[in-house]
Image 1 (cartoon, one colour):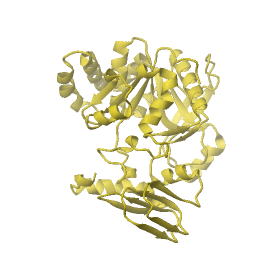
Image 2 (cartoon, helix red, strand yellow):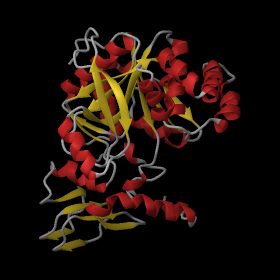
Image 3 (spheres, helix red, strand yellow):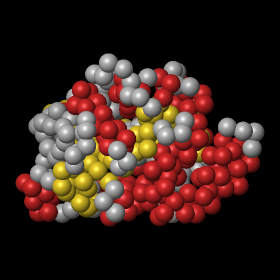
Image 4 (cartoon, helix red, strand yellow):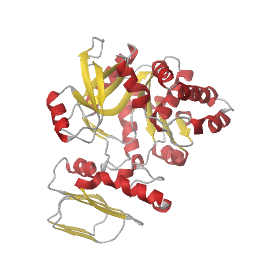
Length: 371
């Protein structure tokens, strides 16, 4: 672990999104990042805070979250400074959330380096994580926008990929390389080729940059979004904040930071990547959650919850129990059961990605009471 926090480095934690593939466990009022999904005793958000703390100290971690989650974020992170919680009135995707944090922090601390880390990912091997971040910060000091790509542990079709290009000669970043290109989620044959190549890394959505460099790239690619965020940031620490946010925020473009900043920067040769040799999972669906809890063993039935009335015979998969209901599972492989007070999900690991379509159908039918 570093002997002291990294100089002039702020962490930004975007804490938004519902995690619809984890319905009915994850909901609008209690999204994925507020749940303990790993058995650690604390939420994914709190785990993210604890992971970043040695790199920043408590005064240099910021969270961007929605109005509905402001109180719960404060309860989960009692040590966060009140002024470091940035509230967005509605979701406008990651470019707006990260761009807002960058613009505010640049005004408060000119020349600041920021790193964006999702609130709802699982990471193990802390020292390896810190080493990767330290290298990414060195790249940011050298003027690059940098990202941390995860060295694949299998040929996964569930993640996007980053292709490494030529190695870079940057002090304190011995593993850095230029980003050749981003690749969307591949089919299995392509994923196997990427895994064998070893120049392809999983895109974990971690971006580290000087705030002014990131904002300049955003201005070049999405000038209207940049202009709106600039106007809000100028008013943020004044009594004009509420008026500026109410007037400007609803009209901001919804676009991911990958498309607004990272991919255009890669095309210009300005994006660098550091391979992350640590365990990482975005806990994107119940199949990945089962794999995470079981330690990758497919021959187990995993239980998340405190219900002692779950009976399993010759079955594998995952049971999430939030009620006192008796659940019996006999002779089923790869089963997913999620039992909550007002909704029951039954599927298989093979079809876990399709849970999102159920959420869409419930939205269309006006069933907001279970969302």
